[in-house]
Every structure is written in structure tokens, then in C-alpha cells.
Length: 94
Image (tube, rainbow, N blue to C red; front, side, top):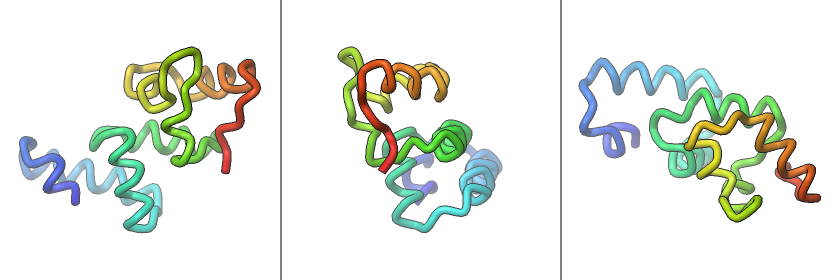
């Protein structure tokens, strides 16, 4: 799956990405969903989300006019997104 989405990267880069995602211990369907939301380079962000209790199902929730996944991909820290959701009265956990 990563090979299809990261075909533009060198083999060694794809291998490094695969290792990063593998460390998360996700099932294949979960992995595909996280990669779809955060991109092939999003393993560290996904780890932060999992640690903070942010579910992949919440990636399309809009907070102050921008989706959670857009905020995270744009560099907003995980705990900042979580704080923003709390301030808006939204839960990002399942």
C-alpha cells in the first residue's frame, strides 16, 4: 500500500516509512485509513494522535472551519488540536 502511495520516493525512503508505520502496530485497514488521512509521512503524527486519544474517525471533524487532518498535516501540534476541540465542545475520541 505504501509503495502505491509513495511511488515517487526511493526504495530506501519507502522502507523507512514502512518501518515507521509498522512501529505503530496497526491492522492493515487502520493503517490504510491513517495514511489516507495524514499522508505517507504521517506516522509520527498518527503516533501522537494515538497517544492523545484522537481517533482516525475524527479526522474529518471541522474545528474553527478547518478539518482536523488539515490542521495536523499543516503542522499544528496534536495537543493543540485536542485543546481546540475541547474548547469547541467536540470530542475527538471514539
